[in-house]
Structure formats: structure tokens, C-alpha cells
Amino acid sequence: MQAISVQQPWAFAIARGGKSVSNQALPTAYRGPLLVHASMRVDLKACDSPLIQAAGWDPRDPLATIGAVIAVADLAHVCSAAVAGGPCDCGPWADKGAHHYRLASVRALPRPIVALGRPGLWEPKPSLLTEVETMFATTAALNHTS
Image (cartoon, rainbow, N blue to C red; front, side, top):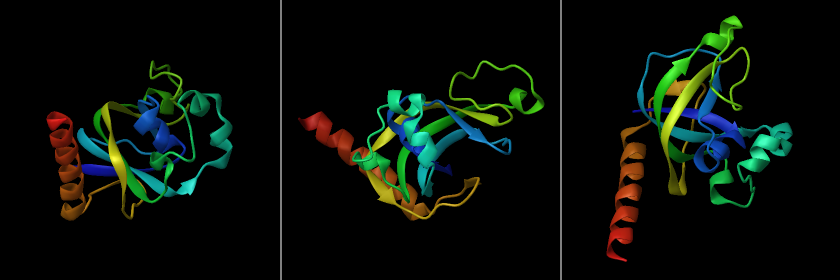
């Protein structure tokens, strides 16, 4: 499994608001599960974006935190058409001139897990993966018994 650090409020929009594209400077051959880490940086101008507002941005939401893993998604596809100025159908979240990491099956964590991130795709420590898996398993067990 890989991880990616994304600035807030964009990370929140992935976890809660249906943002299915992460705009990246570099392509990747990786496909599969991906931890979504909210980086320590915040794009303050983006907080007023109509897309972010429509995604339900709320700085009081626990998933609006910084410096933590907040979701798991599947990196299903990378569209690089926009880098060459070509057309793509990646939707309103896709920036011109960026590689579009197409995300599917996004699952928000029940609570953030504090972790250090880094630029680009990175490999999370096994202890972080275990914590994420345990959190989902515990939540599933609680939901099954109630």
C-alpha cells in the first residue's frame, strides 16, 4: 500500500466530499490502495472555493485536521492528457496541466490517525497500516453488533 499527502481542504474533499481526482505534478505506475494523508499545509485560498464549499468543508470536522491519515482510497487510474494540453473527462476537480490520480472507493477513517507525511507517493510504516486496518475492523465489528 502507498500513501499520498494532500493539502487541506482538498484532503477533506476527498474523504468527505466526493473529490475523485488528486492533481499531481508527476505520474505514477502504482495502482491500488492508497492512504490519504492531510499534510501540514493548508491552501487557505481554496477554503472559499465553490467546489470545496459544495463538498461540505467544515474546519471543525475531525477530518479537516492536518498531519494525519484521514481516508483510504483506491488509485484506479492516472490521466495525463491535461499535461500535454489535451482534453480529458476527469471532471471539475481536475486541474489543467496536472496528472489526474483517479480515486475510487474512498473510505473516510472514523477518526484521524496522526502521522508524518512527505511529498509524492510514499510507503507508510507497517504500524500505521496496522492502525488503519484495526480501526476499520473495530468499526465494522461495532456496527455489526449494534
